[in-house]
Image (cartoon, rainbow over all chains, first blue to last red):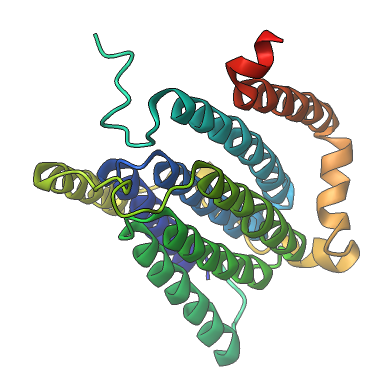
Length: 97
Length: 184
């Protein structure tokens, strides 16, 4: 089932990348990043069947980091929304030169 | 590489959850409203959790349901609720035609990269060895197989994770509190 898992991982990751590229809603873009992280976790788990459980330990770390990232990122989105009243990335161009 | 023989039951359910995950991900990425997108993503996470369980990672599967489908997605929905998004006038339209075209090109590029890597000849140290986890899983159990390396080989990283979480909590509170409360 290794080949099938890796194919599924690739498909999910590409769907995540395409989502980041086509959406302008900051919250949906965040969710696409979570999807990409999950796809990578599936790779770790699929390989950990053959290489030992260290891959599963890395999945635990990836989950922790993504939880922290979601908390901080959503706080940033709330903070931006308070200033600009939007989560549309088209309207958030403060750093554009 | 020798993979163990899988029963038809196993293969059928593996494909079932794989197709479910893919279909939910496609439905997720085509939504423009955040709430349906979040619910489709929860569906994807559940399907991937089922795949984790089928790939001998039972503990990771449970963590996936608790952390991703439970905690993280609830935080996303809370933010949608707090910001009162979801009115049709506030929905961010997806990018225009050329952006979709460019996104498709990037996707095609990534797929072709995978095709090239799949045909390349791998060096010996990258070739997958024979089944390793089966024996470990019988010796330890589903939790012990993670706990052994986590609290022995990766103890420092595990402890540093607590610092990361503390920083993230403090940062989230400071960022979300806003200027009005901070002035006082």
